[in-house]
Image (tube, rainbow, N blue to C red; front, side, top):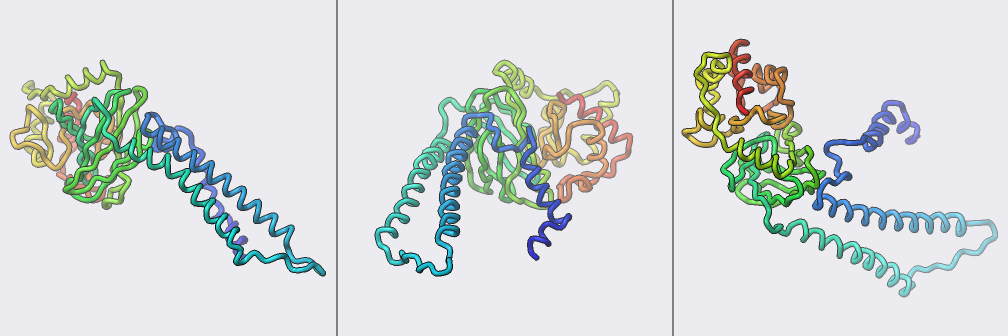
Length: 337
């Protein structure tokens, strides 16, 4: 009866989707496709533990099946010898699991310490969690950005992380495991990408209404491209004076309340950081709104028209901008490169 209920179309359909989803190739949050040495060490430990578990499962199930078929009750057959209270046997099946656990524990402890150790000559980057976006600071270069973490490829990165509000969790599965971002406490995570590429990040701890939309991108660049990116990010935005549509958008930014939360270096930065992303080089980012939206005109239009509708609970209010103001703002944001 239970099996019949399970295999009803609706139940079986949902159950099948779980297995089919595991077969997706090139999934952006696939933790079984490491692209760096730290993720690879986790992957190697996983497969070692997995195959040990497979061997144990096969052996245990094999013994169970043999016992079921060989020692099952038969007519006119005497009762099998009972082993309850056999001290030698008790010692054997206690020692064997201990040895197995010890064998797994050695590489596990080694991997834990290797992942936690601060690498030499690492680039230090600060990661601050907000509801619901990640802020990145490069103290060696005086750069503040958001949503997209840019790193040099084939170089160790040391992330110093904390939360500005509630408990968050930073996870780039192709580069390393998860690490909590805790209010009032610093945690650390090492990253390193083998080659120039783009990787997805995700908050791995429920943190409120828009937790699922608290994402990120990690972009690894060649050394020359990374140095060029640094040089560009250190430049301030230029105030526009030419009466263009973009200049009108700058006026909207200055007068519509955007400056209460957003900084644009060189245009409005007299009072330091705010509770929302620094927009100085907004046009160079491929995503926005906690990396939940692609940076394009359509998404910007919908976002500026009503942010809470797209991201429930966001601190960015509906400013009731007109269509003309939205178009002007989009034109201005496009100049922030």
